[in-house]
Length: 219
Length: 78
Image (cartoon, rainbow over all chains, first blue to last red; front, side, top):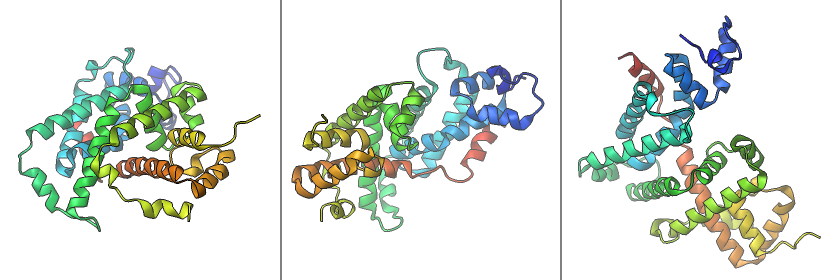
């Protein structure tokens, strides 16, 4: 069985598991996938840990139901383990793009098949200080954000996700995406402009009162 | 000579860096705070940018439930 270090060509025949693990942690998605195809479960667990929270958030934003989101996440990763040959590491699509698309489609599929009453049941569950109605509005906005993000060009979406979810600076995003600073600024600017444009007619977004978070800046 | 900071530049920077001024380049933080104190248009633009930041933050604050990682990894043994 090949280990990820073999795939990377850095530590062939390495006996040092810690070095192997460190190498694998820093490996690209593409290198991990190549190792998984050779049966390396350790690379699979690294890839799962790398994407678990991201796919969970996507699933929750679409399904707004923990049980369904858990099912979706498990199905996506099982499919990943069993059918990785459907994605070509040397092809044009990035692994992240592919897994987001697969996950998005899986969630939409589950949503279509769900019982008509489950949305009503979701509304009756209230946690914390938020009312069921407010939670529903939040979920609607989250749904909408996920859907609009899906429509953005890949580079714009990646820049925004790295900025918000990974909390990377513009300079760090440049390095991650191998782009110039001017290019990354432009991606963020156009991405945000599109999001705002598409949310401007959304009643929940427009009526969302966040004055308490901002007014201290001008009072 | 650098261009004077105005509403257009403020909007550009909101679109690039979002509403969290701690993520802006240092030299533009004070001019941004100044324009927010005097311009209603700047305040409206800022609130829109802040809503977008909040929306991302609400989405990103969720982590997968404990135990899900183990379930996912265990599925490969079935």
